[in-house]
Image 1 (cartoon, rainbow, N blue to C red):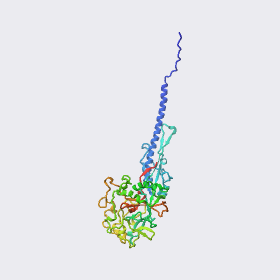
Image 2 (cartoon, helix red, strand yellow):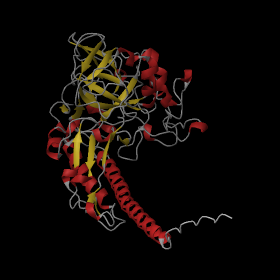
Image 3 (cartoon, helix red, strand yellow):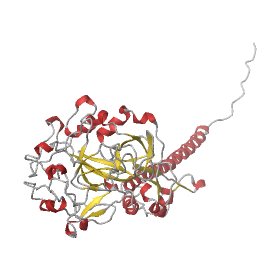
Image 4 (cartoon, one colour):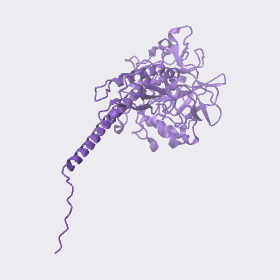
Length: 487
């Protein structure tokens, strides 16, 4: 009988599981430590990004094309940064001016505050870089990854205006002077009147029938997709491209100054007048929508045939056309006093939305006072519009700056339809670019904007006429559309 083979005994394995568990535990601890360190870095990065975004937005909102705007942007950035401590609210931010840079475009050449002050008109974007903040708030001391010592997180943000509140309509400035004194009633400076780029506040003009250098009307359509200094394209002037911007009264660019604009000679009013009339709660042709282009809060038209605040009824909707020396297409409101051919009826409706301003009230500054300049009383008409001056009979009284348009009830007020209420105040005020004319010949050309005028639509536009009363120059700070993060 064979003897069974003896199996060799296996080596003892007692304790191996414990060794393996220890090794796995060490690996798990290492992974947990790595996760904690990476979590710290991630959280610090997120905190800094919130800080950068908020600071950039706060600074960008202050840019208004002036040196003062650059200064305010720096102040706003410092104030905003102080509200966002990092490190789980344990590390306060010490602001440094070097953390903020300025540029004319979101991908442009960035400059510091001094450089921005020297070219403030073009500075519409800011960039925040947290690496430049004092004390390196992004520094994270690693707990488990001690071989690396410490790591610094950082964040950047770029912000600027996404649009500017300018209608894609441009006309020639009647003068290149931003402000001048018009001598009304010889020798009596008390009636010297502020004239801005040749326009008189409270006087209505047909924007389709002006030219300071010739007898042929000059008006232009702005390329809405070509910011200053960027060449436009013929396709940009198509009605379906331009129309929405005429409806809402804005351009998708941060500003219209700081470089030449691409313009097309001849604003196509016959095609676009219905877009403008959305401001009167008129959506004929379905070219605009109340959501994108709400009506004004007061849609009352002021036709010259129904003006109740002038004793001599106007004969036209705007100041009558007048040819100066056979070389200029002006209005009857433009000649200096002494032209005996002027009559009260030739001035058209006066002061529907704005009053004339004494030159003595004007102060050369980038921003008009919040409550506007002091204005003339209606009793000054006999001096401002002599000879043949109309009389202000029944003109709104009460507030110093009262005009028919600002009424909220009564004969001068009409609310939009119930479904479109309450409307938006001052929607009937068009912001129109005033060009340095003459503009180079050709169907399209480059043109320089001297300023932006505020023109109040007294009545709806027609295919051939756009009657609008001059209400002053719009300060750059008033034209800023939405401010957005660019990246």
